[in-house]
Length: 390
Ligand code: RIB
Image (tube, rainbow, N blue to C red; front, side):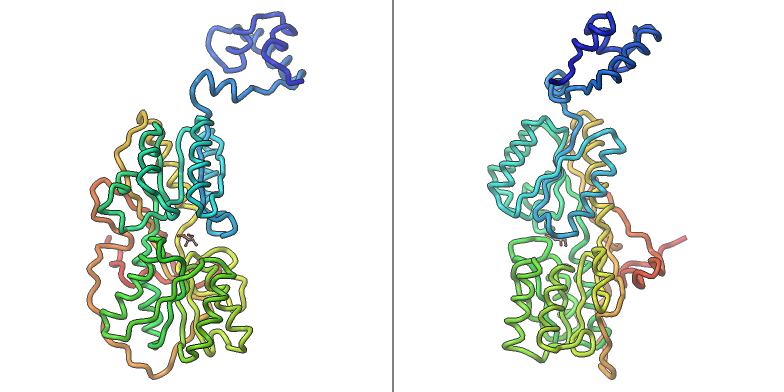
């Protein structure tokens, strides 16, 4: 049976409230008594009952993280950043996986609130219907959304805080890179059309082709899993074998495409170049290592939890903050140049900075601009970002 405060009190010869104050390091307990109580508690292997503590304080000193697909290594890295920030602040992180299922998402949301978490970080690509939005708002705890689409700028979802990569810029960087390598017949194989992060990437990608007067690349929306992308690429190969490059909506999609090419004897990058998005750790160990757009995953998770903690410290302030996370090109070996291709000019970028946001009250986390990332790939800063001044 679990050892209780009463057991420690009996063994120490003091009352329960003295034990509680001694264990919680409160004032008004003599040093000798505190030492004795700690010794007895250790000997009896006493563990504080967090559930009971939560009932008394109304808080559990924990933060919920609801992700959409635990199989995607992107989320492991986000969760790691979130966990570090929570741990550092003396909080526990509770991880829930909702499989992009709106019912599961709601179930976990209710469950986390019942557990009295102090705040919730939630991936927002699964449907965030009006009922769930009202529930989130009425929950009385801060909420930070991940992967929030820029399409929500004019919707009421924007009243939640968010931490999200500059997806449109990432799409532009991928597009410019392939164009400058000489690719003209390009596919974009990506995740579901309903997921704003993927449509933002697609829009940025298509924009640079449009700006340079080049033919519009075909966009193939599908499942953003290895199997889904493998299937999409296989189907594509049945009708079109003339493309020279693929921009994959994320790295897992890129791996599915690579696999489909390999099965048909199509070489990457000699026959087809592939660029991904995310820069998950595994992208370094594929053959060839994947060229990709890096979004700082660890930093995103960390920033989201820090935003929650800051809102908690301000007494639950609900003033939304939108943190845009900078993206950059990581050049490895999965893309090749097509010699002799003329590169048309592009329109000057209208963007203020990589990841810059026009929203008042928004903050920005920049990816560090550096020339090398320790042999893991050549880092190219965004071609659209202005040179740092000073
Ligand atoms: O929905 C999952 C995807 O969204 C990840 O692969 C990552 O790209 C994130 O932004």
